[in-house]
Image (tube, rainbow, N blue to C red; front, side, top):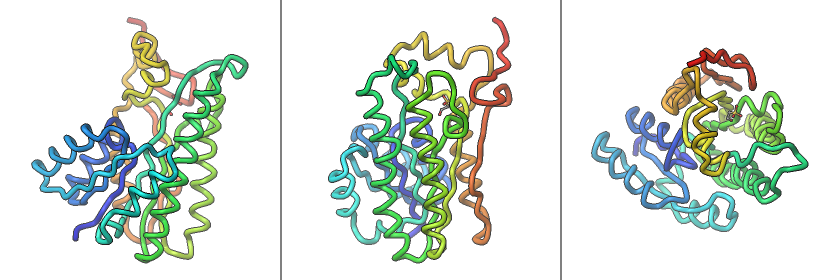
Length: 254
Ligand code: 8X3
């Protein structure tokens, strides 16, 4: 069998873009996410375009039992995962801590931290059994700097940063590479979800400059994964040229 990449949160955005790039590069794919129809459509499209074999695993990454059942029931041949892309993640709300919605906090903590852990535990054991592997964790500039009203989202991405470092230590004896990719502003559905469908507010985030697109991140992940066996990129922060840090943008007035 060809190499296998498992991508969480694969039905849209950066996850979907990674599916395209890794299919193009000859990988077979395990695509996970909550939206079965979107995953199936993507699987069919990649099969037609690249002849990619795709296994779809439909579950909510916040559900520990569902993650375990759906991954463990994959046929043994599919457990020879070479690359795990821990992409599933989201932001809900952008409010000062005293006004934040604890339900939003739960969703972010359960998805961005706990979901990443559930998937990583299972797949890292497969990688240990296989004797190799590469885990790519999607962090964020929000995991490098705290910005106003970012509070809990930033905390979850700081946790990803910590787990990225921790995994690298723990999996070192097994020859497993671990990398964090930390994007700045990428125009996906991210801000629509952050602002609960307030598309006007979401659009403003990307006004007056050229943001990154999902493909920019997917190509960067491919670069990281395609380095020679002895090279690991630990941590990579990537931003639009018009963004200097979490809050400083060169915006042109329209
Ligand atoms: C997404 C980028 O700047 O909105 O993680 O936190 S940012």
